[in-house]
Length: 201
Image 1 (cartoon, helix red, strand yellow):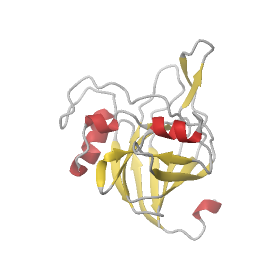
Image 2: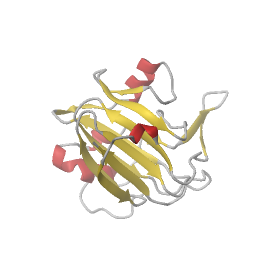
Image 3: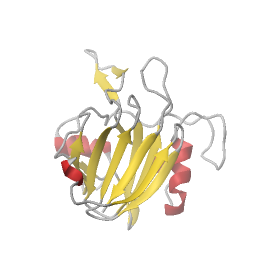
Image 4: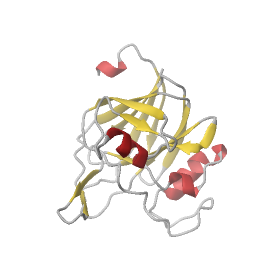
């Protein structure tokens, strides 16, 4: 992949369905999410390292790009209109900036079972940085295939990612990133398989 030419991988983590992991990424480093088996969806949230009150905002990203779609060359913006990432590689071309994370059925406390939402997993992955439930409610959903029907309803369609498809972006600031792997959803074609996250310098 041309976007990775000359780059060196410094971290790689496989994230199982229903789990999440946190990463510190320095300015100009790359983060790549890979769908090893295809038909998977990853939720991502991000925050400035020096102030986690400033977070990645899908709403601001939609406004600045004048689009609900992401594509190579587009930037992802913070809640304070700061460019946080630039998409530099994308083999799928279909991601979601509309859906929130799924609603938790229990309070966001440590080691709660029986909840298929990623909210608790993301909070735990980012707890050391002071991130709370409010900070992870509005993720970017990579590989999610969401369409808008004629009357404005949202349709959750089968993910278009195939085996080893990926999306790669460059950090434009020092950031903390949380990535969660969605569990399979009945009727959507989303599979309960792991997501691979790699960091490059």
